[in-house]
Length: 220
View (cartoon, rainbow, N blue to C red):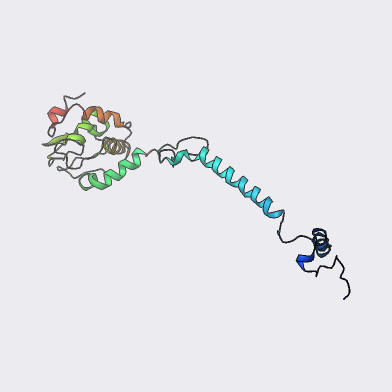
């Protein structure tokens, strides 16, 4: 029976020595790369990249979210911290709107009123004269006859337009100031504007019933 080479990898394991096993493994793996681990550099790079994004996102949210408080965000605020102011309302525009809404029915679109019934607003001494008298009429109302430009008008009780007891229209001080400014500057009238603060100050003097002409004439 011929002798077998001690380096033959086909030797039975029981007859193989440690050196022969190591030698057989070296021959078997000679020239072959170890690809069983499937190791690649790209996944490691991506891991670091995404880790950086996560770190940046966490830092950004921590700094700029205001801890998710609803009080932090202000939709009126521009970049730079400036807060947008509410647009100013042209009192003449607002006044015309209020006039067309309620006053035009009696005093007419041209401000001429109706003879002997509703007094005119054009060149009226009540319109272009004392601010307090004009405010009183619109704020609390008017009853009884009134003389305008030398003519007597038997006015049907003019309702109170202000936010006063018994006021049917409940207009704000701003709306009253606007409509008075409008009639003082419309149809050729050239009187000055009436400020909202002036109406407010007069209203805060207290509630009362409609005025009559004699009482109005006592106002400055």
